[in-house]
Amino acid sequence: INAMNKDDILAAVRKNGLQLRNASRELQADKEVVLAAVQKKGTALRFASDEMKNDKEVVLATFQNGRMALSLRYASDELKNDREVVLAAVETFSNAILLASEELQKDKHVQFSSCFVSWGIPNMLLLNDNDVPLSLWAHVLGHRSSDPFYLFYYLTNKPDLIKDC
Image 1 (cartoon, rainbow, N blue to C red):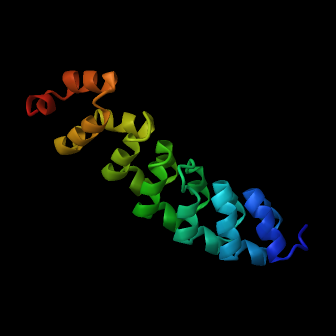
Image 2: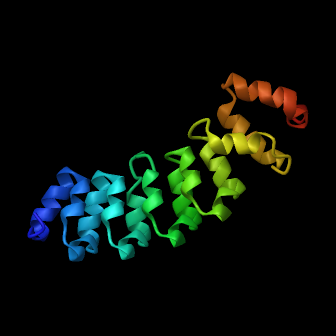
Image 3: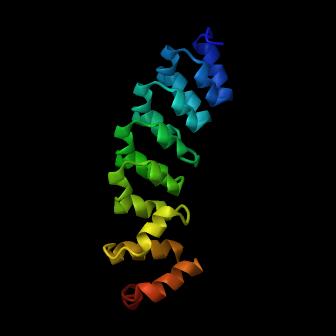
């Protein structure tokens, strides 16, 4: 299978992105081939060349169309510290924040973006953070106002927010 040419590998990765593992090193560094693979299966990024793991377009393609962003673990350290990339990742899978750089794991905007996906680790980090501006809490509350837990939390722990409403 390693003797496959580009057309054969393209056909294979379009059916199963993980077939990128069977491509030559040259084709694992070919942007067209890698994009086709990661668009089919985001975690195929693990078989891409280091150059492709550092290509923003390629990494962003791994979590398009609502796919979970577990592929962020295979991105370069540079892109794990890229705010646009990490925001795109956490907006599809909130716990992808754990795969980001330490700096971006602490970034309030990144943490809040992850809040809109699911109740997860980032949300737990924020619940008792008194340094979070009330305007950001109001933004989250506006998106989660139908969630009884959030309403209970705000009524009991963030009275200043409720008072201002």
